[in-house]
Length: 279
Ligand SMILES: NC(=O)c1ccc[n+]([C@@H]2O[C@H](COP(=O)([O-])OP(=O)(O)OC[C@H]3O[C@@H](n4cnc5c(N)ncnc54)[C@H](OP(=O)(O)O)[C@@H]3O)[C@@H](O)[C@H]2O)c1
Image 1 (spheres, protein in one colour):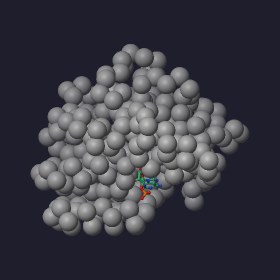
Image 2 (cartoon, helix red, strand yellow):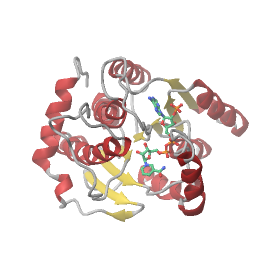
Image 3 (spheres, protein in one colour):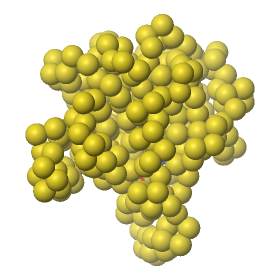
Image 4 (spheres, helix red, strand yellow):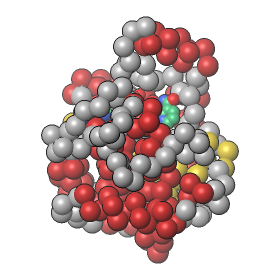
């Protein structure tokens, strides 16, 4: 039985993975910010007979303090974590800040995904073939750019601009993690599932919401279609410390988005934003 921690494990792709892993006899720690989504997953686990292997934690992962507490709880409770799946995300059409004064997309999509693998690297490194699987926008989308002088987009915010910056930052997070933890045996996998029919439309106002829903129904893959290769990567991660895929097709890590010096620069900037980082 493997222990898999899934951020955003209560809906969409994360929940799809959680259900499959529970059905296959594994232990899942699912994290989300809404109690209702967590309760729904727990009810499914009761019906499936796997409730004793599911732990739901209601945590706002946009908060550095809550993320640090969560990681401490996981480290205390589980000696070994076999896999960390990073799925938590939310599209914010307008700019807003967390209680800690950070822009919301940056806090959740960049800072949380920087922090959690670092905070859990000890229990991960005790596992046999440990893996961090980051569901993100890898694959050379040109629109994505790191705004070094305005990472939190105070001057010019746009939901897409913030998300695309997050996509580029996540490529660099993978590069920096693999470089810094080379000897740990932890494999880092960046995975872009492309268009998947999940709760994607919810944050938009009408009529955009209905349009996104329609487009998703017509053109997006269903969660059940994209989970098998992800489960394969969790069970048998690639041998390389870092790999990247766009819906199963390998992405060339020689592309400029994966520049090592830029990745280490971002790592230093993010580390400087976190007051007391454990791990
Ligand atoms: N779907 C796509 O087309 C697509 C395409 C490319 C990449 N991706 C990547 O795949 C990831 C998963 O996508 P998805 O479509 O499955 O997303 P989703 O259905 O919107 O699910 C997002 C998950 O994140 C959780 N979450 C949101 N804000 C949170 C917070 N502040 N604290 C804790 N949990 C939070 C949500 O739970 P609560 O609501 O309970 O907070 C939910 O479980 C995305 O983040 C993105 O990086 C998706």
